[in-house]
Amino acid sequence: MISPSSDLQAQWARVREMLRAEFGDTAFGTWLKPLEVSRLEGDRVVMTVPTQFMRDWIVAHYGDRIRSMWAGVNPAVRSIALSVRPPEARTPPAPAADAARPAVSAVASAGCEPGEVAPEFEDMGARLDPRFTFDSFVVGKPNEFAVAAAEKVAASPSPPFNPLFLYGGVGLGKTHLMHAIGWRIREVTPGRRVVYLSAEKFMYQFVRALRRKDTMSFKELFRSVDVLMVDDVQFISGKESTQEEFFHTFNALVDRGRQIVISADRSPADLSGLEERIRSRLGWGLVADIHPTTYELRLGILQTKAEKLGVEVPVRVMEFLAARITSNVRELEGALNRIVHHASFSGRPISIDTAREVLKDLLRAHDRRVTIEEIQRAVVEHYGIRMADMSSSRRARAVARPRQVAMYLAKQLTTRSLPEIGKRFGNRDHTTVMHAIRQIERLCEEDRSLAEDVEVLRRRLQS
Ligand code: ADP
Ligand code: MG
Figure (cartoon, rainbow, N blue to C red):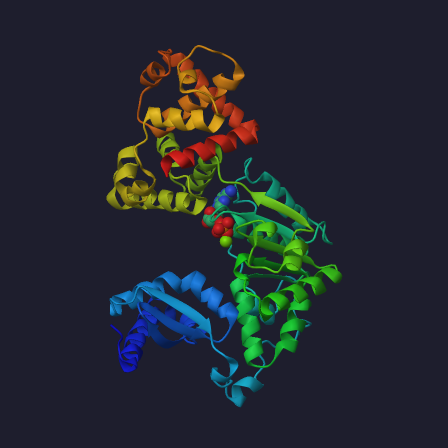
């Protein structure tokens, strides 16, 4: 059924209110307000936006919510489409009074004390989070290379490599490391002007400058920075002017010998939303990836955080968390905080049982019951060996190592005892299982590819 367009406008007004309530005035004003509804085509609502990059941004960040809100106010709606409005249909530019006020004033940091940041720089960048320093970052195999690179950048008066490109999955410490670089530079060379900001904020400022017809001071301001760090550049996508501007800024800074640090959730080569020349340029410096955490690193992080919180958390509880919450460090931290808060409110001691109870929802997501047989099957498949090798007495490394990996995972992912596990692996003794677990723990410390195998298997089994 096709609603008359006045109905559609009324429905849109309700969706807009919901969007504003959910995302807040700032995000709404920047990204969602410019949306206009155009028509309903069958079960699809067509909306329009002023630019391509706004379109991409809105689709990536708000698309799902917009769609479900629409479906909420009009059950006939199943999907949404965003198209770019032709220029003549665009809303008129901001009133002259607004346009006359520069978005960002020209550089005027002369009166600044060393170590202090000129207000303009505070304004264009984001504040550094005091919790995110090198001291509070726990180093392990998966991130040691990235940490070394970050420390090198922070310590070098001129760029040792440009850009430093940090990449890795969500919640693995990219933002933390960038802030750590910022703090370290402020400490050792307070005169250098460091600006850290998200790619979102970079785009926002550029768009604002465009709107106010003041891109000159935008350019000057950004190009006067000594160290520019742009977080999450996967969001600078779309073919439009921002990407171009980002690239010009980037090149201008590199030409002047200023340091650039970039982060993204994927490697430069995989940044499909970026133009080829930009993509390849981003890879010219040092590309440092942060690998998914290993069990050992997660345990180390938990120990450090618990110490910082000043709470005694039983080792068994930490092992339980490290084994169960494998997705990312943010979630791990959140889990620990919840357990600690719960203990202080309820007055009950921290135990695996209370942890299970407090983290019920979180664990449910991770907590698929895994059987020993599933583990064996996954390991067999991963290493290309035979199921019979799991219980055979063959000691050749090619089968013995995977067998040990399977035993290790069985201990970690199931509640079976060592003798029970031994029995399922060709009636082995529990001391053999114990040895296998120790062996894998030790090897994971020094053998990154084994550690990754284990992690991949763990993920697969828990997903
Ligand atoms: P990303 O930017 O890669 O998504 P963040 O830097 O925001 O991840 O990290 C998420 C949270 O996890 C932050 O609170 C951060 O302090 C913490 N964190 C991540 N890695 C580590 C680590 N190796 N040691 C200590 N804390 C970490
Ligand atoms: Mg981040």
